[in-house]
Image: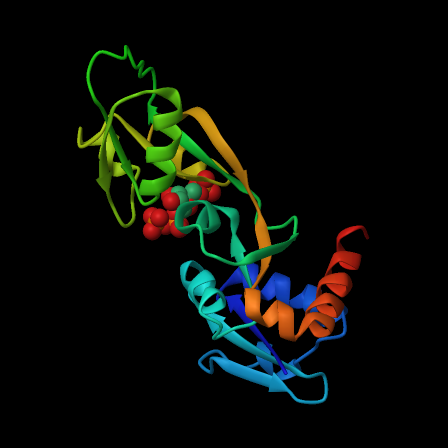
Length: 207
Ligand code: PRP
């Protein structure tokens, strides 16, 4: 049995469609909104719906053999897992944004509000820019508007949230997409199953 942690939500449903086409279907999965575990013993697969930011924890600790999570999570938490495949979906970017017209004159410590503290620290360390990181849990866009921070480091997908709050992207930090990840021990002991899944899903990408 291969245990798969899927990110709950639209991305997870889309990715499940890829797994289904790869021959790892589990029809019950889409019909029930509250149940969290589904299995298809015939196909040797068990799926869990997991909060997207928790997928890498389940996989790193072996509660799931494989999972799907965004590059943002991998960059922020650096879980000790194998990254098997770029699923080329769930595309967005990690960006620095600020109030329209903002210019960093480099004089003072830059106040950066973000959920992605490690990403922000690494990004500005590379630039040699001193920052004061303010960790927030959501609605990050409020911070520069209310003067809590100079800039934010956050995910931009359509750009609508920034636009509706009069903010602009200053720089792109990196591009994001969903990745198929695997637990290291599982990969050793379930190599055949995990490779079959990876190959089957990879075949969906070029269609
Ligand atoms: C994310 C991100 C932005 C928004 C970007 O927030 O933090 O706020 O999506 O999407 P857009 O460019 O398409 O507008 P999320 O919805 O995860 O909520 P959050 O405020 O809790 O971070």
